[in-house]
Length: 273
View (cartoon, rainbow, N blue to C red):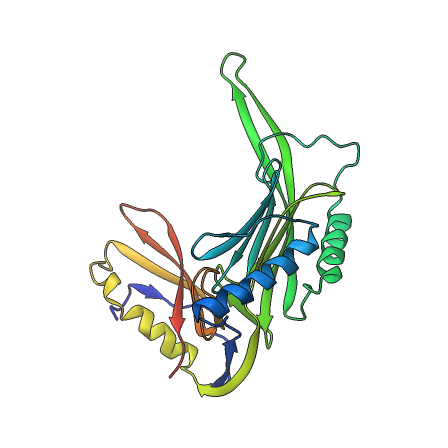
């Protein structure tokens, strides 16, 4: 560690000396059995949206299409993504007499998830946001903006610790209160396996400060501010095989140099001792 290059977080949390290891319910990896298992799962998820179609094997995913509706199920994780292709991520303005109310939309999303057994105890609502498209008329020089979609988002927590990464999130999009545009449901079911010893937050921060990627930075021309450190788990993207949720410390910081006034980063540090 170079002195004066790093600034530690003002508040470093106290953690336990061990963490629970959770094994994921990964699909069987024997090809014939895998395809049958995934096919049954695909048909079950398709029934949530009254979809019927011919399954397609896309390598890391099984898919089903019906007119403008698409469903993709990831073989490695059983996560899925349903989309109304005409309206999901559309640039068309919402045309509805009913304005979307955040609380109403959240209740609608919760009810939809609960109806299909998808509202799990590990899930926590995070926020509701609007997708806004802006366009500028070059001749009139006026900027026009309109809402195209409202999304309700959730994260996952295990033992009150967040699960980071692309493989642990749920997002439901709506064009209006009665029209769902897409549902991203990325999660792997888990089972407790054992306890393992972990590094302290101070030891994890030392791993960051000693990393070679900061070797070229000089204290006279750069500063690295480590803002926070949080204990949790990391879930790989849904297309990746993952046997266990990885226990990590999420370290958030900012690098400031003469060339780059601000570069924010989040670094996931393996926390097992």
